[in-house]
Image 1 (cartoon, helix red, strand yellow):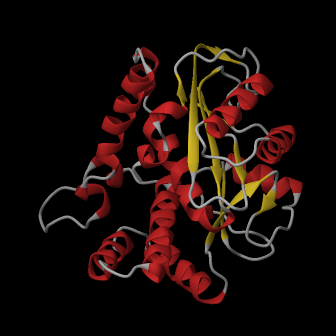
Image 2 (tube, one colour):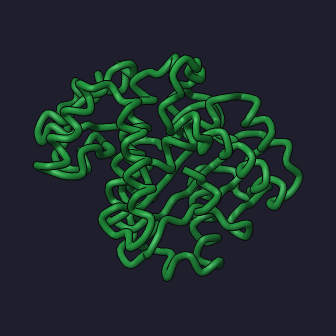
Length: 277
């Protein structure tokens, strides 16, 4: 996913004025409203605050991804705020947060949201990428850095099967459960796009075939069963609640899902693949 398709330059604050998490969330929500990406502030801010009260969206490595599902939106929008010195976000690694990606998305774009968060996490897992964003002098420069960072994720070697005899890129040689989740999210998004596409279906089907070739066959078989019987097959977990069946996960199991990052887990109720962000 090219995340900059969902981030406008006037929705970036290189220097956040707020000094606390609540102040940051309010500032960025109002920024989306002022940029006419939201029709109202209160409902979105209430959802974002409620989400943060149950579990921090600080995902580690200096990144936070607060979010809300907003009825009436046509597409996902994101505001970006930067704290060069960092702010306490109660992140999972207990380290200060430097970049906040505040996301508002329609209920129909849950997979888009999942792709967005997975891409942010993958992009900024590299400390040199985070440093580049922290050193950008303006909103325009920060957006330009993000665009440049997105390019490797959209390159053919990530999506497409390699020619015979050519070595796989490192991202696939070391593929783990997290990478498989990202591939499944991309695959699910392609299927959603295919359903409503009026043109370019051949290219979408080619993309689907190429992504499928990269996924473990055992995972793919379960994914196909879920897409046939109870789509979507892959859903996020928020506040320990599966967003596919909206049932709360048992506490011990939720802790296990967080701890075992090398395993793709399924909801104990609906059996969908789950992903905690």
